[in-house]
Length: 296
Image 1 (cartoon, rainbow, N blue to C red):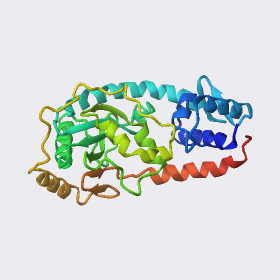
Image 2: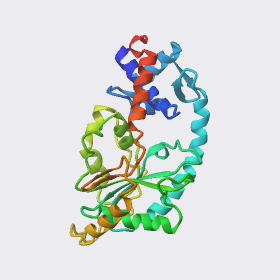
Image 3: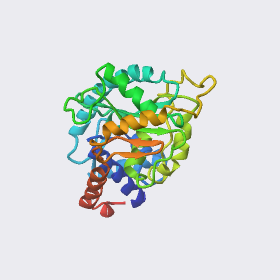
């Protein structure tokens, strides 16, 4: 077994450990970092690393040595996540009635069924061209009516919906500067709930760069709800109200904007960008564990 594959397997477990998330062998294969390999080869590598006591197997999960308790927490979070996913399905199905919404997916820890009871629900939305601000306006109003919108700065976020990212169908590719391991994982682990006209497949295809980080990744489509496969007559790109909705929302946000990304057809509303922190912790752990010296 090559040391390169062992290194990649260990790196994959290190990244998952940052989130307290032990992995099954098929998950290690799916999210294997920067190494193309078969499931059988990954399974053999996991066995070798376990025998060398570099990693630990607990039930069907693999984790770093000393992190066995994460198995218990993963199973506990899976139960909490199941309840949240049902809630997401219920209200996102209503949001999807907006004809200019092309896709709704859940991201973050919930997409991996790793959310705690007190966590929120991160939502990713793809819209028709020239409808991104219109979509956000009606989505926020809808969730506020049900008391489900996560307001910036609020401490009570349990089961609140965080509309953290909108892109339109003309801007499906992630912007330069955000194409890294963190974003590759966010895309790969996103659970698409509803889509129109196979936009999810197009989104994955345009962001094929994620394969440079996760070469074994292939989309999973069985979670999709395809009740709305085609829009009758489609939605026109002409939207005279888009500028109006953009203006009133930007005016309202003006004094609150921090690290948000606001570009034409691309909105990311996460004031606390975890990307630098996660990647920094990942590289520190790699250095600390001195992966290059693990047995081959």
